[in-house]
Amino acid sequence: QVQLVESGGGLVQPGGSLRLSCAASGSIFIYVMGWYRQAPGKQRELVAGITTGGSTNYADSAKGRFTISRDNAKNTVYLQMNSLKPEDTAAYYCNAVWKRFGIQYDYWGQGTQVTVSS
Image (cartoon, rainbow, N blue to C red; front, side, top):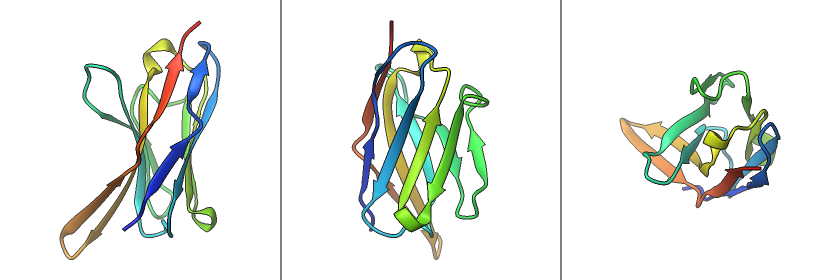
């Protein structure tokens, strides 16, 4: 089991940048990691994911603006967000997934709020 703690959210103007961090309580090298977000009244959606091997995938809305990375030595995953838009406003959640013998283990952080507004 792993506990996840997000940080780095806040209020930023349109066009600005933020770097979110997700610190895990233990080793993350076996986990596929992801960042999700949920805006009020909307479903939670995948923003970006990174495999144990470092392959990444992004939502269309994040491509070219966001970068996900992982530092297994520090048990931390990052989401660099550039050129932020008001529609990026949401609570951002870190996710860790591990599959073993056909069973999927899902862990979530408590979320960090990102508000993009002038």
